[in-house]
Length: 221
Image 1 (spheres, helix red, strand yellow):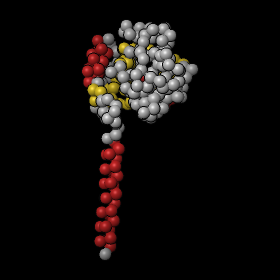
Image 2: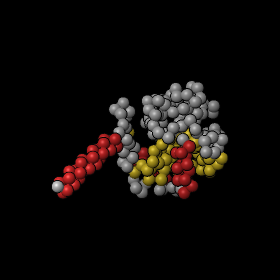
Image 3: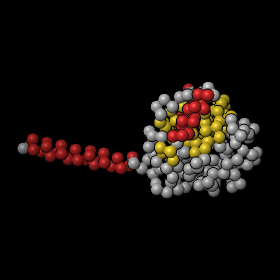
Image 4: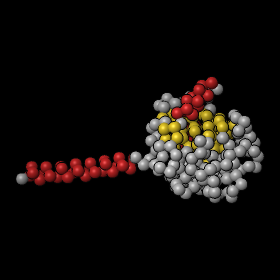
């Protein structure tokens, strides 16, 4: 009798665990596949982007310019601001390690609002309050007035971001930025700096302390 009861309990436990496994699998399919180079979005109304060519070009660029050949950062302003579009890519493992929410510049719209969440304005002009696309080198670590009080100087290397230093475009954190995706809502817009959440910046700061001369490439697909 005890053997029969034990057998029934075992079957019930197995069924519960199996149910949890099925539920977990279902949930995981709604998230980004960050271990691949193709970023699949959780909803059909968000475009899927294959960044393979960008990763390949970044690897060659870093090699040619003697930059960090372990990791680089890709930001895609072509994506909705309510989803994660700041990606840390590992050249050696050939995969995205982490992804974060990141803000963009408001342009002619009101600061702190989400007016351009679906179409980020870009510019290299002074007082445009826009983000700039192109390749940047993550430079000196400094003190910020925002977030966790840490920022990183960004040196623009292209014609599309050559004014970054004079425009004081830096990587920093901002309390208004969420740790998690908030789509279909947008992320508050600043004056052109790529700003992440405080918790995200702590992780990024730790990575940048160990990795110097990192490429940060801002694109708009």
